[in-house]
Amino acid sequence: MTMGTGVVLFVIGAILAFAVHVQTAFISLSTAGYILMVAGVVVFLIGLVLMLRGRRSVTTTTAAPGQPVGTTSSTTRTTDPSEF
Image (cartoon, rainbow, N blue to C red; front, side, top):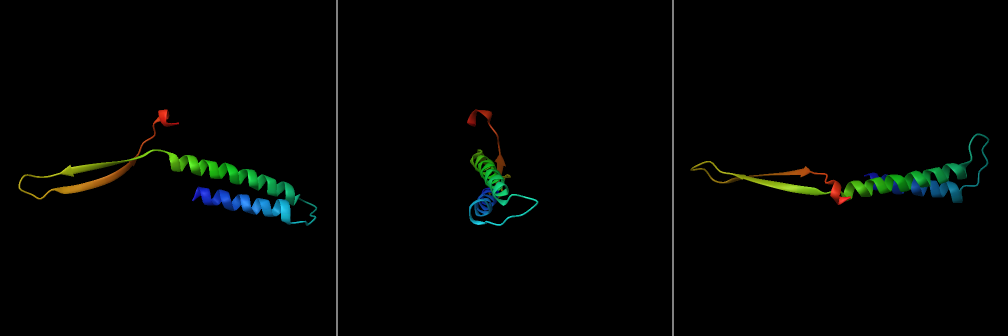
């Protein structure tokens, strides 16, 4: 979701910076567009880093004597500093 938000911010900023030519007294739309474009790139990169973080799945198998084998699966997130 953060990567999509970054793209949307970048596109809105590009529209404001390059396509809208309206004079306003209180804000420069081209400057606001450039700020939104930079924010969009930052949000996109944060989303990319979060997506590329390591995910590891752990599967646990349990069985009681005389009962069929049941499988429980869970996914845990781990962060290993050596991956960066």
